[in-house]
Image (cartoon, rainbow, N blue to C red; front, side):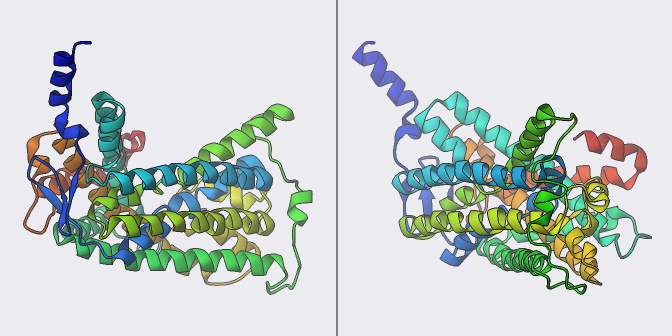
Length: 405
């Protein structure tokens, strides 16, 4: 390749190959729009710790337990957790060495190819844009637990307006909202894990000590779809798939790095906290859950078919089996916090991904413009439009179509 041709290619891709300029206010690019580094360190730390804790963990874990058994559940969370930690460590190193506000797509464009950055960015955007109406619908269904006479569209409207306003305000409002929602999520998960542990060691009303007896009867490894070795293999694979879903959201803090103060110090601390979160909430959570609930329990099998609500959580089923009253009502209210936090993050992530794509010339330029407070207004509005899909659940005929999404 001639030197003239090489220089031309470097010139064509210049904005992608030059280091981002950082300042106390934000990360700037040649295009002019900028996000402001006005997250507080505690905001970033809490998002790193609780960002991935959602319905995938508190409800989806039951599916992995039913299909794979307690041993496969534990193995799956350990294996996928190791992969997640290595990925987050690599992301942290890149974010410290090359701070930018273009997100994952920006790194793919810079270090691999613009085509990969384009595909990564748009795939990531649509993932959160499509799941937004799902989370809003889940919030409405949770409220219907107490008021089944009201249409889910009422709650969808209220929650949509609230989370849009939070994302249109200064980024510190989003950070503060997520900080307190995350505190509640951590408190709920810690309570559930400790409750399952107490039940297992004989702290339930009956005083029965369970220990690891369910690992012997009905057993440690479940069978899925088939009997014998093939069923055990599919059970393990099903647990891996479900555990991967449960870890979804761990990378969300990577999107917030572009608005984190003192990136070198804040990012390093956030990544380190990922390890103990994986160990406590996922691995220890899997151990105590496998101790407290037999994977052949009819309540657990029925609960995994519910998908939404306290009755679908294996942690709540463990409490029900121990005959502890009123617990499902409390957890149902806590689940509302989980889905609202997720919906709030959906709009934030979608708008920031569009911002990064725009600055890499892979999305319309309007998505790269920000308000005086550093909010990518067009990105927030465009992402919020997907919330309209949640109204399809107001009628039974359209809810079938929504299910396909």
